[in-house]
Each structure stands twice: as structure tokens, then as C-alpha cells.
Length: 99
Image (cartoon, rainbow, N blue to C red):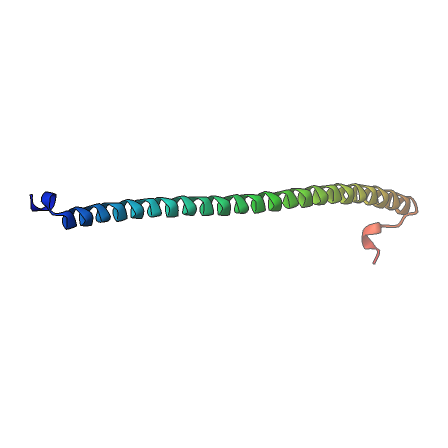
């Protein structure tokens, strides 16, 4: 009960309590700032990933279109090749033995 009657002890207790509360507040502020920093980082990474995904989708569509065009050209060339083989066969020429 010495502390209850001693003003210096009371001031020391009050100061310690205030410092303790200030430390708690500081830690909460740091935790909040860390949360916001991490959230901004995740949002930035998400935006970058979405942008990269959009680029990849665009590239996939371009390559798919190019593949369709090449497929169509391949079919046309195969058809022309078959016509030429038939013409050569009509002339009595074996197309497989031509070099």
C-alpha cells in the first residue's frame, strides 16, 4: 500500500501505463500499415497477372486464327497435289517415282 500513498509511485505507474498503451497503439498502427502494404502488393500482382493473362489469351487467339489459315492452305495444297497426281497418272507417269 506504499504505492497508493506515494505520489512518485502513482506517477510512475501512470506513465508506465500510458507508455504501454502508446506501444499498443503503435503496434496496431504498424500492423494496419503492414496489412495495407501487403494488400496493395497482392492487388498489384493480381493486376499484373490479369494483364499477362489477357496478353496470352490474345496471343492464343492470334495463333488459333493463324493455325486455321494454315490448315485451310494445307487442305488446298493437298487437293491440288491430288489433282496433279491424277493428271500425271492419266499421262501414265508414276508421281511417287519422280525426283
